[in-house]
Amino acid sequence: MKLILFYLSLCFSISCSYGQEKHKDVPIGIGFLETNKSYPIPFYKNEKDSIPFDILKFNVKKNGTIKFITKLELKPYMISEGDTFKEGKRNIDNGLVHFGPELKFRVIDSTKTHFKVVTNESYNEEYYIKIEPQKTYYATLSEVFKNSCANCPNSNQNNDWNVFETWERYLKRVEYISKRELKIYDKPNGKIIFEVNNNDFLPFYVEETKGDWIKLKKDFGRQYNFDDSKNYNGWTQWKNGNKILIEITEETYF
Image (cartoon, one colour):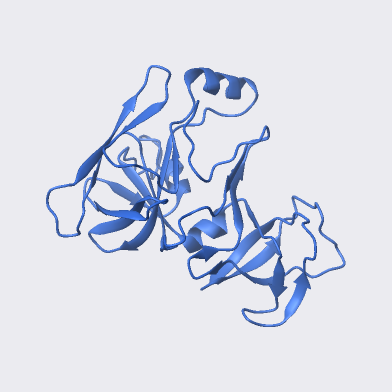
């Protein structure tokens, strides 16, 4: 069985959704750091430390999943051991893909030399990960796939990759967001142009971000409960302090 903590929910259509269950004192931060699962990750207690407090290592188990070896109680934003060989074959036979292991940390702050990440979302445990010259740091996950071929033109392949994705880049590339008690404004803190008075599911793209606000665009691929006579083009608040107000579906598989 895959180890999936907190934010990943799988339906038969396979929808990867990330809710907002986190310790109330955990800062939203500036984005996310997703790492590969082949190279060890040293964690430092302080930015100026030269000796790591712990080193996270990865071991491929006999069933094909990944074992995370660490003395930390690791509960980051997202963690998954990935499919077993049997689960992967079943997914492929059903027209899906073999889901690999995943590891994504919430980034509280970053400098030219370090990322400060939350390693345990339940207890707000934070450590530093050094930015190392031998590693490659991409701005989007799509760059990993773009550079996954060593012999392809303009490819900059490095298996020791990381992806630092700001909240803005993340929200603008996820498949869709939804929100309960939705109110859409003509501008941030402006006039309400649309309001939901029920629990209708309305998926939106994110066109733009501005502080606590996001500009919405109706997901034309999912009509659902949209009313063509109403205007949905506007802004809604996606966070309030450290509280996230939206539900995020990163991707779906059919």
